[in-house]
Image 1 (spheres, rainbow, N blue to C red):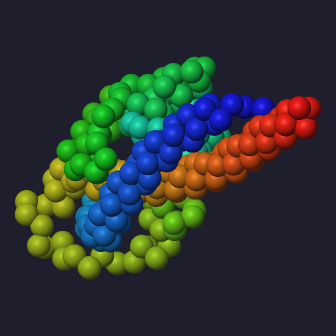
Image 2: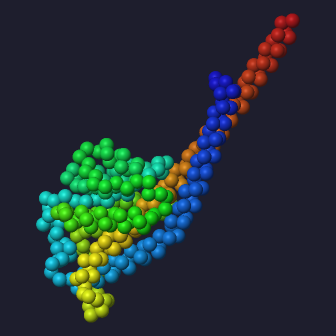
Image 3: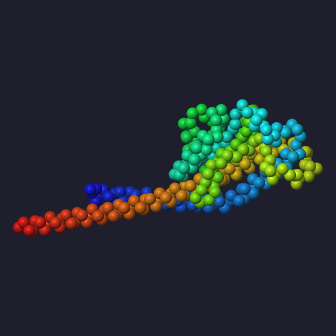
Length: 287
């Protein structure tokens, strides 16, 4: 039987922990709400950049047709792929990074290369055999930053110029709702049109100055920036959602444990009082 003093100490310790987890839950909730409010605007920005970029591609000359060729992956079958993967810098967010690692192990081969965001995911990948990381970004903050998207886009463009990549894909956790989030893989190179995008462009070729080709060669980085920013926003939103849920569950578990300990404390206290009364009564009877 645990002593009453030890039980009281445990109750006090768990109560302090519950206050911390509750505070972290409230912080994650506030950050989640802010990011979620801005996600629609980020999504609209991404779609607008993508639409203009794809319209430009329809006016391009044959020297960049490889970027539009849906069989490009087959042509470069023996070449490596580049993956940009988004994790978190902080823990206490449930299975956020673990689920990302599972998705990475499903799709990435030993020949492929990585750009990683987030120190927690980086540590997991460094334990993975035959992992080739060409750049890492850590301590990116709790709010999505467009400067991070710019750094990633420039790195992607630079690697594309010097390497024979069969494809470039981004792996990030997509927020679905308050309960569900899942890692997704989205290919951003080679450029391929969705079925609904295979229509005539709305832009007029005569409106391009100096011409569509020169504009498009200067637009790749902007397209990559928009793609990275949208993925980064989704990843941060999912991270905050999963951290909020994890901290809420931790707070609930702490309260349940406190209630159980209080019940044990009262039970032991009652047993001790009963024992003392029995001893007193027994002593009085012996006299």
